[in-house]
Length: 322
Ligand SMILES: [Zn+2]
Image 1 (tube, rainbow, N blue to C red):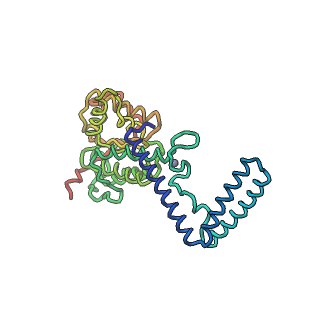
Image 2: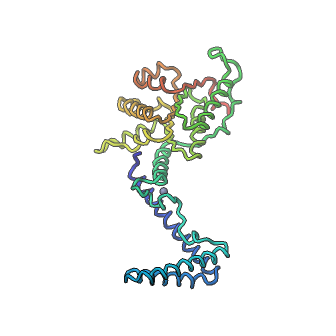
Image 3: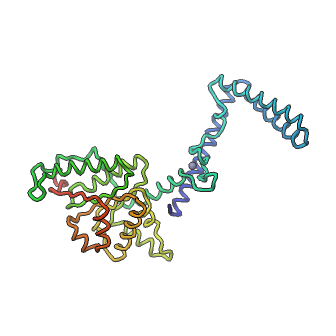
């Protein structure tokens, strides 16, 4: 996965802090043990000097002496262990307790690859950068009220807005519970019917489970991509994150200034995510497929309607009912 340079710097900084915190905890623990366990300090000193003697014996080729000292060291080690356990400590208390045992907070695994803990830090940083573009007042399923929707059957749809919303709410909850069953949702309907609220509720639940969610509003995110691409590199960290985060929520498709460049970025993002089996949720105020055909063209429209579950929102604007 590609991350921004700032994300690398942030992750390295955090790992350094974790290492220092672990070292500090160890020093504090060692001091506590020294002051609690009688005889520990002198036994440790003895262990160090025996260790030195043994090393010297080995270097000078005196194998018999080295073996004798090794035996003495082992006895001493056992004596220290029982001293510690008498006071409720173990040998492990003397060693650094890392945040991540797999990489000892270095961010690098023994085979040279990047540890998941560092990946998580970088993803978190980039996610926060992108999420900061959008006014992200977190909505939850708990704060979603069906009572605001009319329970009178709609002539056009044959069900009431409330019953429709009940089944959409169930679908969104299932989506969050079953993630990452690779599914894409297209939330369509006029403004003020709760699309963003439900998309954010899914985000809220999954972010709590540590899923790498990127939520962004179409009206600002493509501007950010364009700004990043306007320098010489023609590279956009944001575009990369849109392509590779675990769940992408593109809010309010159609609110952006739709240029050919935006269409091409959108197609690129959708295509890349579909081929990597990454889940996407899109909300839009468009209510008909043909509107999307007209604005985004057949290529994008067929990606959306061929690969997304379509959830139609209808009813009266609930924002006016408070
Ligand atoms: Zn790690």
